[in-house]
Length: 351
Image 1 (spheres, one colour):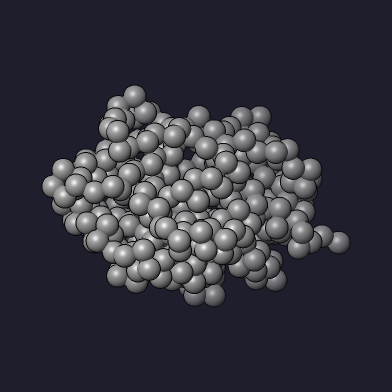
Image 2: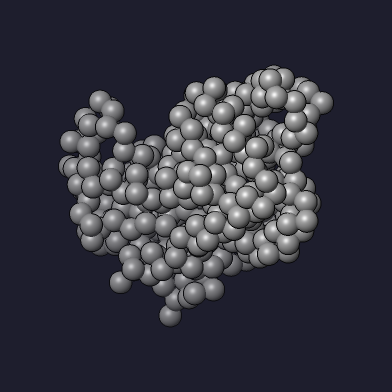
C-alpha cells in the first residue's frame, strides 16, 4: 500500500509539482491544499492525475480541513510556514496521532523579532510539529533555535526540476565553448525586492565607464513592469514558462540574482544545473551553498550597487575559457540538491 502524504501549502510552483510527481513515482499518494496561482508568476501546470489537489479557498475553517485530512488518513502532514493560522490549528489537532512537519525557508539572521520568536517557538511550534524541513544551512540554524534537535531537522526542501535544467547542459556548454554568450541573464519577479533596477543601473554604469558588447536579458513580470529601465542593451522578454527556456539557455551566459530579499532562491539551483557562472547578492540563502567566490561566480554585498558593478566588471574581463570553467564548476555544485534527495527526506520523515 502506498504511503500517504498531505501538504498544506500556499502557492504551488513548477519545481514543487515535480517533487510531488517524483514522490508518486516512488510509491506515495500525494494530497495538497494550495492557494490560487499568483498573477506575478503565472505558471501553467498541466493537470496531473498523479496528485490530489484541493483549493484553499474552498476550506473556510480548520474543521473542514481536519475532516478532509481525516478521510485521507495520511502518514505525514507537511505545513508550509506559519502564516496560515488555520493550517497551524490543523497541525495542533493531528500532532499526537500523525507526523507533522513545518516546512520553511526563513534564514536565521539573529534579528530582535527572530530572537523573540525563537523563545516563543520552542513552545508554540513544538506543540504542533514533530519535524522541521528546510532547504539549507541558514534555515537549519533557525530550526535549531526554534527547538528542533538534529534528529528532527531535514534538509533539501527545495530543488529545481533537474529534468529541465540539467539534461541539456552538456550540449549547451559544448556550443558555448565555441563562443561564450556575452549576455547577463535575470529571471524573477519585477518587484523592488528582486533588485532588478539596481542591476540595470549597475550594468549601464559599467557600459558607460568601460564600453563593452555585453547585454542584459530579463525574464519575468510583476508590479514594477511599467517602471522597467529601457535601453538598447537591455532586453525585457516577459514571463516565460519553464519549457520555453531552451533557446534562452543557449543564448545567455551568466546568471545574476540581485535580490534584496531572497530566503533561498531556487533559480540559483536552476542555473547552476544549466551550467552558468553566477553573480548573487549575499542575501540569497542558496548562494552560500551554490556559489564559491572566484570559482563559479561572485557573491556581493546586498544593496551595494558599486560592488555589483565591480563583480560584473570581473566577469566581462574573463576569457571564454575561464567563463566555461566556471560554468562546469556550477554544474558540479548543483548536484548537492535534487528531486531524489527531496524524496529521500520524505522517506526519512515517514519512517
